[in-house]
Length: 266
Image (tube, rainbow, N blue to C red; front, side, top):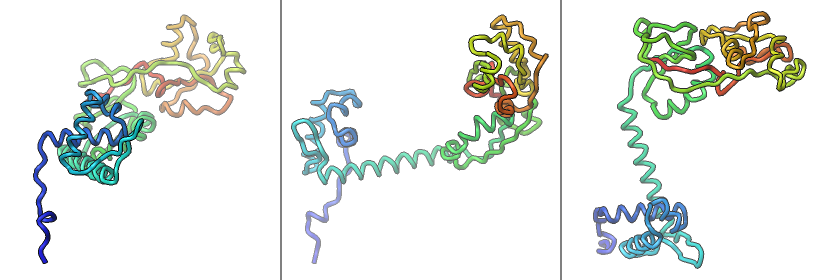
């Protein structure tokens, strides 16, 4: 009628040594290798084996089956691994929730439409997952704005910012390289002959960067191109990457659009 003494015993709190051995067990169970666990823990394989032996002795059951060149988890070891993984996942989620509660409210961000579309939008899902309590308010435009007057917390631009207007920080660098379709390059004999760009229609995006990037590139390579004689201008960088197929030359390409630099102002 009464439970036996064996089943009514309450678990005693784990000691720091037992926590250390459980950490070692989790590492060995993940790698199924004493040697790899030893590398991760920066100790010797014999020290790993010693910790596991002590843990098995304290628990009263085997965690691993030892074979000549490999180890496997016992059924009890599999249960322990599941319990530890579940506990670690719960702990990590609690830590993330605590951090997220510290970051609440509305974050208003301003940037050029192309930068929002091509750089920010693909990453917004990850940001929301990490900061679910932050409400994003994204504004777009072409001009450099006064953050305080517009109620903006963070602005992202490409190109160079006027010195002293904002507390700004460069967050990435860009390089410039002319690009076009292979058909266009063949038609104008552009391979290994950049001077033939003089016969091409050059696409400009001066609205976003405020710079004549073709002129900068031409001067760097001493080509002496007249970059305005045959040209077309766009007010969005993503649009200049999609010219009518086979009719226009060399929109800028790069890790985003090959700017000389990108800045964030806050």
